[in-house]
Amino acid sequence: MTNQIKSKDSQAGRPSSPSTTQTKRTGRIRERNRELILAAAEEEFALHGFRGTTVQGIAERADLPKSNVLYYFSNKQRIYYALFDDIMDRWNAVLSEIKPEDDPALALANFIRAKVEMSRTHPLASRLFAMEIIQGAPLLKNHLCIGMREWVRGRSEVIQQWIDEGRMERVDPVQLILLIWSSTQHYADFQAQILIIEDKEAYVQKDFDHAADFLTTVILRGCGLELP
Image (cartoon, rainbow, N blue to C red; front, side, top):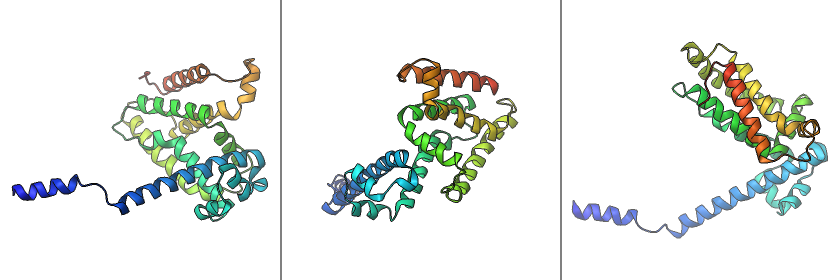
């Protein structure tokens, strides 16, 4: 038995084989290239719109050959879909993980703060989404509608359970999610308007901290929740 244990321990501590190391390295390269392509696409679509953007332009901005871009995404529309899937995943990551046993105040506060931070770090992504939706989502309606509806329905069910258990005020869960989306994204989508009103040249970190504190306080109070 002792020899068997030693044998297993020895195998567990054995260095990865060359093939395993190469597979991991390849995976990291693929992920890095995908991130480069989507970051470049975000800027190109924001500057030129869908029609004015080309795969060649995305490739040049990503500093990759066009053939590499087409290896990961077969055409411009696939890049556009992947970009918005990535945007939605980043936006909603915090609330995607909520469970009925979670603290409603902490879950909602974390979501609000994460969304405000996304407006600071990825304002172009928010504006791209806004432009697409304002136009009636001509390119994304069919692509996003099923996943978006299911996501909102799933989060709403958890929020409704918190309400039914008397852990927060009776509010419309769908309207609550829409309120958080719109209020947090406002700081990216209407940046120019806010800066004009507040007579500022640019945002600084404390502006986003103040916005996150304000929205968290107002929204949680409206839900009958104490700040966590």
